[in-house]
Length: 193
Length: 359
Image (tube, rainbow over all chains, first blue to last red; front, side, top):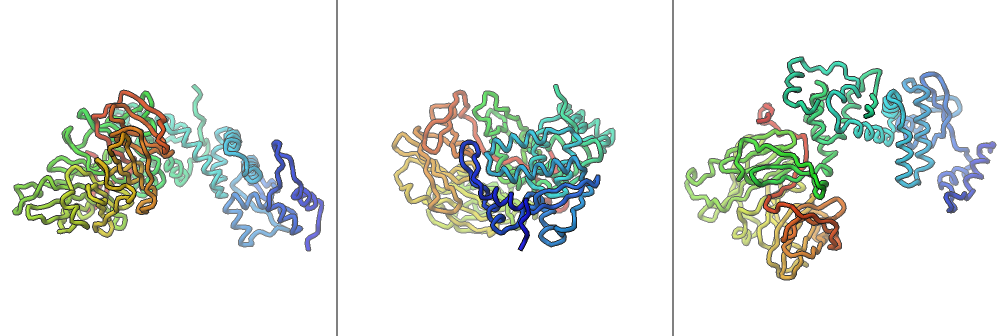
């Protein structure tokens, strides 16, 4: 029998509360109610960035979004009492963003499409390093919807662009064509460049 | 103008991630991006990439081929009602004449026909292959061929990953033959056949093109059913016309609109009925759209269940499922011939390891 600590009491009360949201009375998520009835607090897990900073986040949030973390929890390799999940290729700034994304999408998944899309657009308003880091982190953690969001954004960024612009965006310094090939391409398709 | 931000300053993106980005782009962008780098060229030209790209984007890459005035143009169906629909002029391969006929399309390929040639052509990439059916000219065969009896078709055999060009023809003794050319085997084969229903023999005619859908080619036969050739089983079947259609109509033409088999029916009344088989092969799924115009010629079926077509008095019109006019436009040249196709990067399988190159 787990001990009820303050966190559990809070969550239990929260679960039974009927909150006003936008003028309507909304009942809390059934999963929360169930968890509260079972007497277990909303479990947290620890994620450790490459800079050795520890982030505590609801297990449910990460498990819903990241295939990698879900697999770790399911196959029992993660011990709640002791361990933290080391994410050596994700720095603190990026990890915070990723957690932010997952948390928002878990708690707001009933929001209407437009609001979610607006939030996503604002979320991706990062500098260029940030987009790359987010992409690599989402890929490593296998967060499907974040990946689709980033790929969709990149696709729109590059769709109609000229070759020189694409090379700049992707930092392609050596295109790999021989000088003759490059010249031939430029001659045959001048409007591409 | 603000410059688009760079995606990375550090290392290059791993190849798998580049592929994920490229796989989401339209064919037109990809053909251009072959020039970005040797790596991008290799990814985009790769057969497996072309296949997975096609599978991913097939439903959203419809184009309309517009044939007339000696020209071939490609139109984006979503831009049909725009003032400037951005049509792209295409060069007819092999300098076929302006009288070339379109005899089928499948997975981004179109089959053009002008005696004695058939040309399988991907307008998005330019890749094409010419096949001669010269051996079927009347002078070359002992028993006379009835030229008027030719029915052409083009389709994909998913089991063998092969494309077949088909000619169904009849000789003076009433015997019917299926002549087919497999791209992989690279030669013509002939088999004597019987059509599923005797009444089809009289009805099958030159004017009916074959429509490829769901692994089969479909022809209009002006009888009580649609003639179907299954590409994998290599057999003929039939799909009966919907019973509620009845027999009292002036004309009933088979069409392929937006991935659905359709029947365009003109009756005595001043309306056109478009019967759409919403679920392939399911007789109860035939749904009628009643267009309040006589002799309406359908062109395209949109994702929002609307039908775009040509009212007989000219122009272009869009009707919804209730038969209400949603949009219309004058100044549409009805003299042209239109054909739906898909954009794809696919290339033809080679029969001996030689890649078929652009003409």
